Image (tube, rainbow, N blue to C red):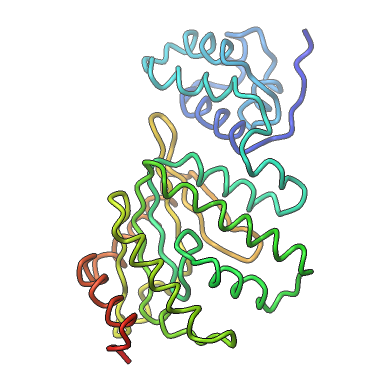
Length: 284
């Protein structure tokens, strides 16, 4: 049967990337011959532009002598999944591919580390705050498109009800935002932060106003970790949907950046105390 070429989705690229890691130092030509493929086919599989079945994953790993039954089973499972699944699939072609990829990466993660130097991160935003951030953004979008983006951001928050572990660092300065719609926006947002901070799978810290500006000056960071054998992914936020990488050195650098910020942030209990002060109007 002729191998059909596929549009490279983030899952296909991750399957290919894991096969490439398992191939290690073996030359691509030698690895391709093990399966009776040409080098071009293997290259496209590793880049995620050609589909590979779950059975082919198993056969290839057997020939590569990969000793990781659980890892092989997981990669084969994902390789065999139909494309276009997940609630986000309905937005394909309507939002940027980078953003679509990030939503899928976020939905599959077992744990997330998130810090933003300026605003409340998206997973913790109240509906009113979400609408303010999207509809009043300097980059104009149509009302219909804005409502779609609001719906997407709120839908992403569904992962909080799962077993995903979330460690989030929020700047205290974000609590001083003023909105034309009135102070109710921030009151609701603080209540949202307090509610989320009580969830057993969430650790929420605030970076005090006195924090040296070098902490967080490199922008918003999200580090995502997955079940074995998937590599961690790091994402640096930007208006186009962010840049994502599973390069070990880059991910390790951004992990250390996050850990340094979390180290100087208030502990979770003191962060809740401070949020309550803001909510009660005791902190000005």
